[in-house]
Amino acid sequence: MSALASGTPPTGSLDLTRYLEFIPARDGARRAIRLAGTRVGVEFVLRDYLNGASPEELALRYPTVSLEQIHALRRPIKIT
Image (cartoon, rainbow, N blue to C red; front, side, top):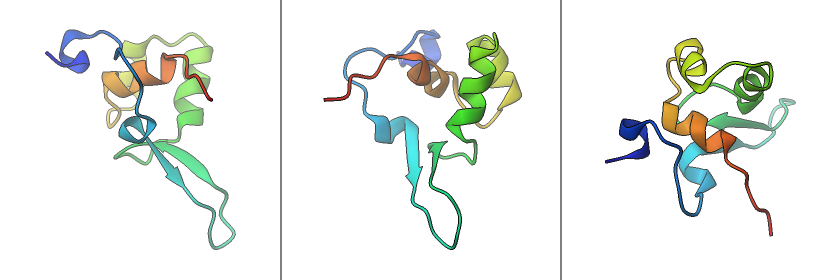
């Protein structure tokens, strides 16, 4: 059963490219980080989460974003 189906956060090592898309700067536009497969910037989801929205509320606000992606954003990421 996937993390999405079970409603639990992903476990194990986190492959950022599975959840995030890194957009390079071009034609005067700034670099961006979006949730993979969507046009939703991580800053919007994180802002709402930090302001008290639950993962389920975020999934309703951003219907193109899966609960699995939202839970992945909530996981601590170790940068080495």
